[in-house]
Amino acid sequence: MPEPILKVTDLWKSFGGLTAVNDYYLELPLGMIYGLIGPNGAGKTTIFNLLSGVLKPNRGRIVFNQIDITQFRPDQITRVGLTRTFQNLRLFPSLSVEMNLKIANHIHLYYSFVSSLSNLPGFFHSEREMQKKVDTMLDIFGLTQYKDELATNLPYGLQRKLDIARALMTDPKVVLLDEPSAGMNTGESEDLARLILQIKEKFRLTLVIVEHRMPFVMGLAGIVQVLDYGSVIAQGTPEEIQNNPQVIEAYLGTGDTIA
Image (tube, helix red, strand yellow):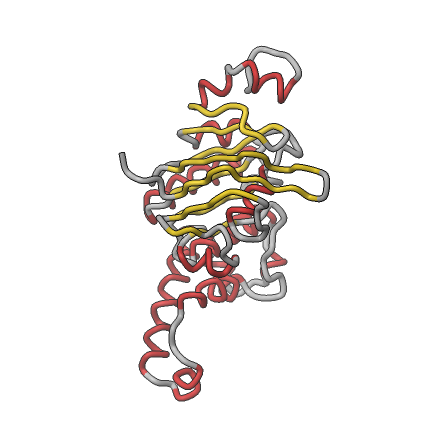
């Protein structure tokens, strides 16, 4: 059996006397869409913050593509191929759509300051390649006509798409999507689900999705993991999770299934 591209073992995080994540584990197969769900306050975003280096764990190990990244900074984690989006958008609102994408790509540009000042061939080659990537992302995400718009002027649904497009500009192998359909109506979320499947195949991505909208995540994920009070309480296919009594209890207190 091949090594998982992301393996997390015995992960703990406390804030003062409050334990937000305890004994979290994950083995993420290459090419999988993995759903991470749970009630409010279950620890989902804290886990994303730990995996992306925003927070450091009190205990545990995070191995990405056979590299121990437990103590890596966020920029180091992005550079090796793991990136994320945020539930609360962190675009550069006063910059254009195109510039938001270009800034994300600069982590992989290797020309020197002297090359840029002197207009050396390496500088022009890197800039051309970056522009090709930007144009591709604008096209895939339906943003071409908005490329000169300030990010803050985009409709909210398009800002969400720009956030994902910007993450892809870092050339990731794994993308963590934190509430990607938040604030979208049903039609927009269905369109986004189709887009996520498209980019998964085109860029050969592995994804972990935190999401409150159950039909969205259940329709995309091959495996769903459920958190409650910082602990994994269930893991399985969407069908298994929807009918798991412990999951139903955590979400609803009682009931038959999770829709």
